[in-house]
Amino acid sequence: DNPLSWFDGPPCTNQIIGLYWTVNKFFPDKTKDLNLNAKIKEFYSKFYKYELSDEQVNKLLAAPAL
Image (cartoon, rainbow, N blue to C red):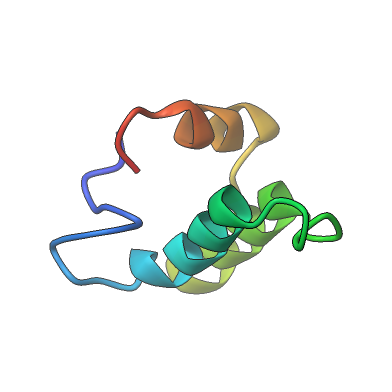
């Protein structure tokens, strides 16, 4: 589970990765070179010292409310 949103409240560091997610959703043609899965893994590694698996990243991206 991901108790802290990437997009809205409560304000937290997850909103940093939320910026990448939002730009990717609204401007997919301009973010073709962005590897969102890699950015998510890098973010969780740096901020939470946790290495996400591909399956975990896919689950986060499939969540109805990021």
